[in-house]
Image 1 (cartoon, helix red, strand yellow):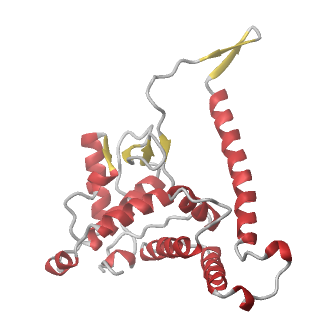
Image 2 (image 1 turned 180 degrees about the vertical axis):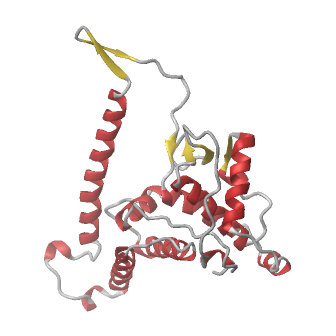
Image 3 (image 1 turned 120 degrees about the vertical axis):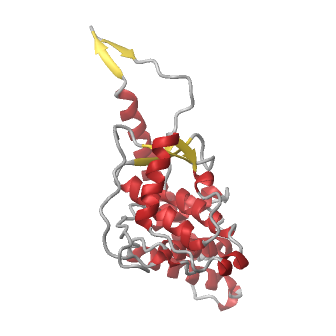
Length: 261
């Protein structure tokens, strides 16, 4: 990788419990009866994708991965061979389920308060009465979370064929170049779907560079990813208030976009 490559510095603001809740909701699983084999495999896959992209993964993500693997291995043991547990904790998953349920309560409460706050921003009092601003009849767009973006990135990687990788191995791309390409596209089109963003790309290297460029534009508040419904089509659009998309300065090289993995 060239030393002129752009270094994406993105913090992961969502934690391991957020990722587990995302996977449970995405697959419409029962939180009190988590299928540990599939959820562990998916969780580790997301961790590997984040590591491939060189995102700043907190140690707690790896601790949770170890916890999931331990629970999975204990469930594979015959009941008589499992460690002695209290009667109410015979299921090795129970402690994790309690954490998830408790965390989900606080998360839902926070989202509810956030929605109320946003709603109050459109209400102006006059003579003791509240006047509500009219909004467009269109369905409101919601900002997309990091895990939704990583899921779309994973789908794009799966479409790349191994034989195509060998044919274009010599092609090289940089994140800085892709930031400029995406910026130009946003200026021309205003908005495009995330699936179309990866159209025509035949290498993991190019897909990874493009995805990192998108994350950097989002981090710099120059672009945003939105969707009309949960797990629906994701759209990339220019962030509000941005007059001109300016490519950031080039920094040191990054390792994940070399097509590995």
